Image (tube, rainbow, N blue to C red; front, side, top):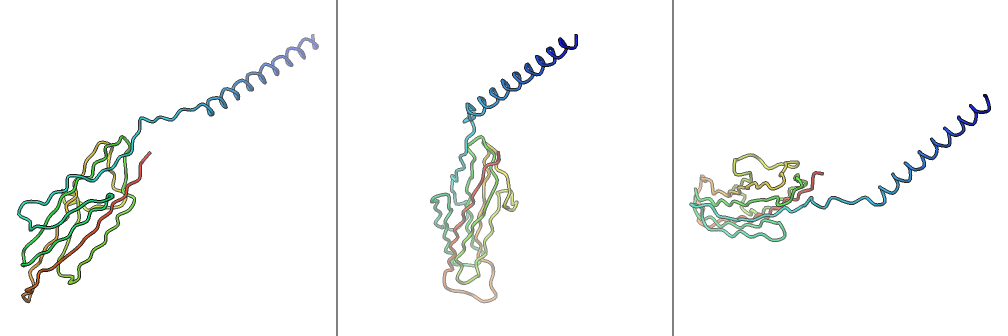
Length: 167
């Protein structure tokens, strides 16, 4: 009887080892033949650049996702406002990784503001969901001055917003 129990215990151990070996082989096979889900896309685009009505004329351009604008204002109270749409055409959500702003304002008289169209500030880590569009508003103003300035004032601004995917 003891001999039969030892044989039975040996068979159970062998069966357990065979099952563990087969499961390991299946696990390794699945890792080597894993397929990637390519249905996710990443596509952030800046588009629909517009000068808002009532604004003075200015130059607005977009190159390599960098927004470049130049404003020449001659009189107090003048302003120029631009809107730019940022669209996430992809299915992956995106968050702002970096905001790079370069301003050339020689006289430091003209003021500027950059926000979303609803006046919320643009911040690092803001989220742009898949298939979502957000509109940025850039406004340059010529504020009232205590002393009259007769020369036109110039401001150049370059804005680059970079995004990373949220997986």
